[in-house]
Image (cartoon, rainbow, N blue to C red; front, top):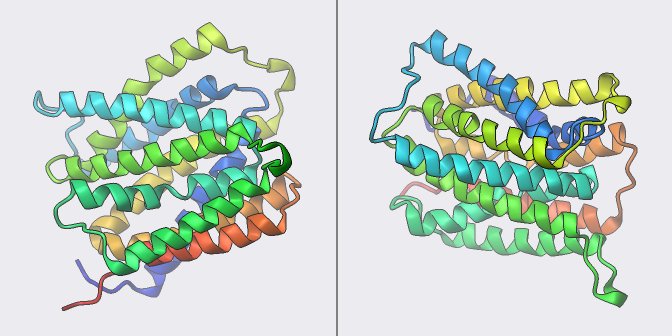
Length: 295
């Protein structure tokens, strides 16, 4: 893999991260009709179809080996909890808050990778980036807090929990990808989650068909085809062709795009505290993903 990255790949990576930044907005639209569990179910039905076509096109073996099943089952359960908490959290907070908080997943991934992945240790620059980003997270959480009553928005904390679980999942994915194709790792997490999301939706949720319009349908389609489908395929290709550290350097684009799209499409008001927190989170993400200098 080349350590450098051409302008065309940079543009594609920025576009992909921008599209990921729109996921909280898409979830908010989908939730108008489809509650959190059903929203996840329909999203991953579409996503599985996309990735299955990608696997067929590449000639990748779809069925896991006996050795892969235990790890995939564990990742599938973690995946289900992470996506479920994310959707519930997005339902209880604003799109802009959700976009910034879910984008903090690389902070948790960088911290956990230090202990799990032998060649991914925490450097001084990464540690500084982690501290800066955590300061930004604090400011973002304070945006929704009622300090006089010591009350915080529960949805914000649920999204932050989902970001931590996503960071853990990324680390475990990276560990498994050392021996398994990324298609099987990703698609079987989705497949395992489907019956759980369907059961949760059937038992505890009601689909609000009376709110049906083009926005909720577009939100579900965006989550399934664009974020989980197209985004995965394009980013997988770029990650294989170029160094992961270079590609992850564009993580800071996602929260910025999410906030701007929330202002535009959801007509949300964004306070100074969130803007300041966004700037610190973005800087921290950049420092954490910055490629190490050659020795």
